[in-house]
Length: 155
Image (cartoon, rainbow, N blue to C red; front, top):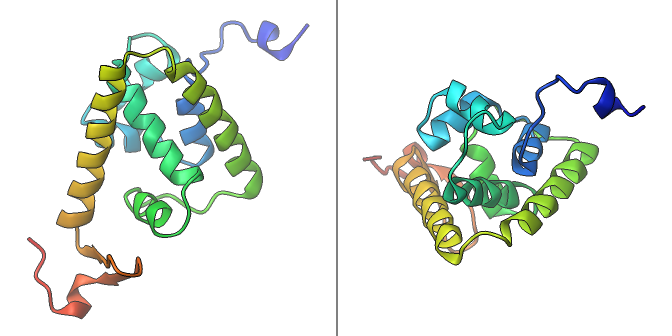
């Protein structure tokens, strides 16, 4: 008998994107803040008790992608949006990447409109966080500097 069969009553993540984000240390509370939802709603989506809109799955997939597949500044910017996030080990990153690939294959069944809506959500979320936070990301070389050091007033 497999572990899954032994624990049939245990709640499992329905979508691989949730497993991948959990591997990196992103909690339901973090996701609730990102999605502007309650932690209970995120948990219900994660375990399949409630249906999550396809655009939000696409949005979360892009967050996971930016954390495990992107290098340098883009990954650093996304990681900085989760204050409690610590650097995951190589094994966790590999498992998160595996979950990302599973989710990307699953997302191929979504309508293009849902994927585009998820992309718009991601770009709006990232840009809002980057340009309204107390950090300024330099465009030329991807350097990050505190706005206080630059004499810039954050709005």
